[in-house]
Picture 1 (cartoon, rainbow, N blue to C red):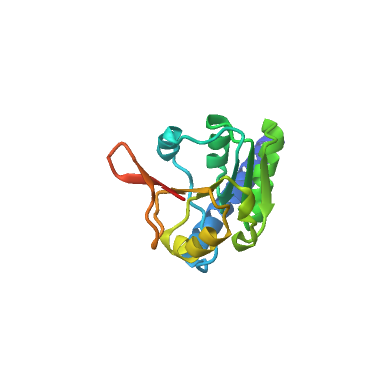
Picture 2: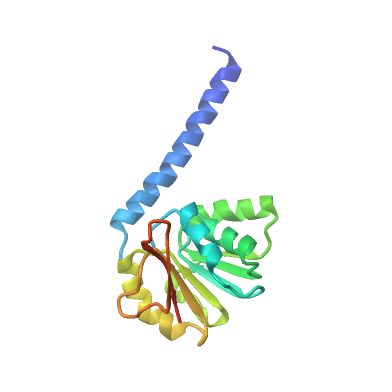
Length: 183
């Protein structure tokens, strides 16, 4: 076996370990997180395709609370021309990874912050995007409604708030409620 083959094998092993650690970490976070922490849930292309129907104001501001894969922010930036997108999460690995990709892809209108979701100042955003489990939404529901700007719109992917009714619901290709808008 050549030295080059050994080096390639070691590098592949390191990549597998790092990627594996990331997924094991997120699965553990999902299963064992306290209710205040947002679990990692990957964004699905079919949900984002459905959100092309949203009528969002260009040059507005948006916050994504607990974004794991950053896919939704890229989508809103490109598809709806949102001028400022902020993302808050406590996952240092995800923040490091997406900051690196921001620089590499020359994306300048997305800011990433390591911060507890309940410490975010919501009054400066026109749109609040959440893709959280119902247990997290139940805890955050009153806080979001109290802290948000008066005319801000909450976009909830896949899950509904417990105590408030959405003013608009978008159905997916199977006619299942999939995206919920709240005022």
